[in-house]
Amino acid sequence: MEDFFRELASNAPRWNFIWMYEDRQQSKVLSGLWMTIKLSILCLLFSLIIGIIGAWMQGARSTITRTIVQCYVQFFRNTPPLVQLLFFYFALGQFTPFVTGSDGWTVEPIISNVGWAIISLSLFAGAFNVEIFRSGIEAVPEATIEASGSLGFSRSQTYIYVILPLAFRVCLPSLNNNLVNLVKTTTQAYAIAVPELLYHSVTIWNDYPSAQYPTMLMLFVTYILLVAVLVFGMTRWEKAMIIPGYSA
Image 1 (cartoon, rainbow, N blue to C red):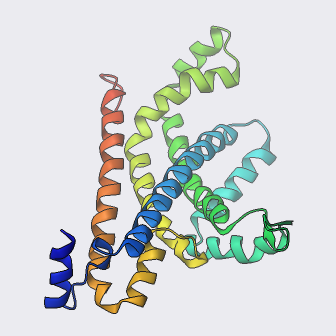
Image 2 (tube, rainbow, N blue to C red):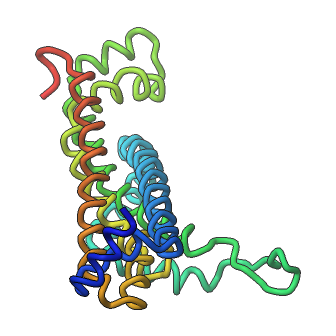
Image 3 (cartoon, rainbow, N blue to C red):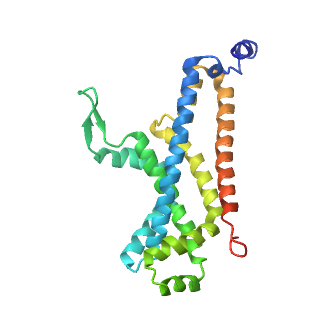
């Protein structure tokens, strides 16, 4: 297989699949892919947690709490995610404490560029998830909520055991779209030098211009596969949670 790609590179210089036959470039691709997967999974999990908690806080009795959540949602929904990422890393990053590195000489920030990427992208997607979960909560019949109260459920118990499971069934299609968008948005972490797949791909075709087209093709196919896996999982989850006569 390696010989085939070496021969292809010599016969068609614009199609140099260098990461298929050179170990160093192959390790870059695998490292970037692993970072992309980790970044996607962590951002998905944290954005879901933010969405669930934020939607619950939107129903709080306190006007201040509801206002804080609404301000958060409006801020992150109405500003570009790349601007948010740069703001977190370059502006807020200046105020984070530094600690001594493992070598005892250098200093490192407590929150790395990867950490800021996770924080920024999770908050961005979480703002949309708050509204998605809110729409699902509003679709739960009021009679069902009142029935749980009459059975002695507290507000938090009603939310966890009654409202949230029903709301999930309503908002899963919209949630699916937002999470797919989040996976694609992780490429913007490249702007703060997070070593994900796009970052390593750019370093490869900067060093080897003949590898630009194949590496772009690899990026394209990889993200199609990542999104396909997510959509497949979400679709299976959606079908498994259908309640006849209730779920859309």
